[in-house]
Amino acid sequence: MKRILLNGVVLSALAIVAGGWLAQADSVQAAAAMKVPVFEVDKTWPKLPANMKVGDASSFAIDAQDNVWLIHRPHTLKGDAQKMAAKPVVVFSPAGDVLKQWGGEGQGYEWPQREHGIFIDYQGNVWLGGNNCPGNGAPTKPVNDDQLLKFSQDGRFLLQIGKVNGSKGNSDTANLHRPADAQVYQPTNELFVADGYGNDRVIVFDANTGAYKRMWGAFGKAAKDEDSCEVATPKTFASPGPDNFNVVHAIRVSKDGTVYVADRENRRVQVFDMQGKYINQIIRTDVLFARNLAFSPDPEQQYLYVGGGKGVFVVDRKSLAIIGSVEPAGIVGPGHQINVDSKGNLYIAATGMGMQKLTYKGTR
Picture 1 (cartoon, helix red, strand yellow):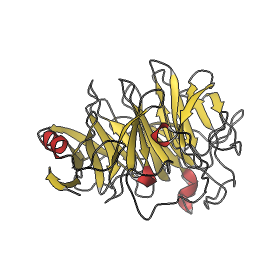
Picture 2 (picture 1 turned 120 degrees about the horizontal axis):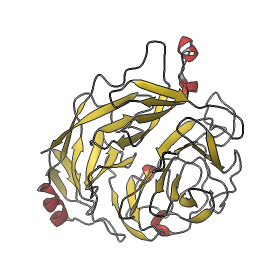
Picture 3 (picture 1 turned 45 degrees about the vertical axis):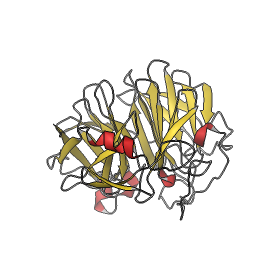
Picture 4 (picture 1 turned 30 degrees about the horizontal axis):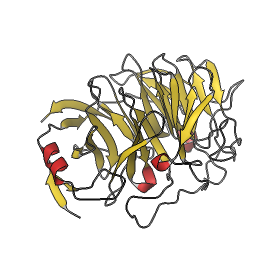
């Protein structure tokens, strides 16, 4: 396979077509002329009070005021730190000050036992879910998190899709199965779910009613049941990759209605139209790849950020060419989930490695 040095990063030139991995020097060389975003670690962010502790930082969401919403796992705190555990949802100002916190067990809904993803839609609603399974060793109830919850920003419960232990597999249109991530697409008011750890699919619901709309698996095919509590990482990789997703870990829908799916354990990002028709993919097998996804905030959403390797890869969203990577001094790594605010700052939730803000410094 052809190797190319671009912006200080050794790249494998891969075709972005379904047929295989082919050298694609023209695409990569064209991308070499593009400017790449530059970041530095903000060592002052966040500003946690001395009497507040957060557990594994799982995911970030950004609201219309650029406040940063963290979902973390209080149960991962040990000893005296457990007594100072923050609520599962913590809201930070752009400067890193704690604004509020809420979440946990309550009336009328089933809170996830292992908090995973969080998203704020265009109406300001907060969506969240979990990926617990009975055998993962979490000191919580031994159940499957097969639900997504919708709240107002003050923590008022609005909607639940699915039920704990409710999943009947990839053909089930009423329940999730340990969903990893979600996004509401404003023009159609549809909720796109990366479903995720137990299932192997993208599933779409009406964001107001929770009514099922459609679903698909890898390459736009029907997903096959391969349920396992333990994440099964492949030992080898072959072109063009398996016909099933393996941990659908992140999902982003661009303004032009293109759906990007991080197929984490298969180390690829697959691209679809709104109806689930497969378009193409990008694969990196020499390093961990497709850990998470985020768009740059410019009108064209030019850059697709993809966690992998020692940091975050910068991908030209339209061509899928990797044009560089984000690896400033002190970065915690590729992270678990990532997000970007309106100023272009990048936030990394890195579970056991903590959380971090990378300040956008322009392009070069």
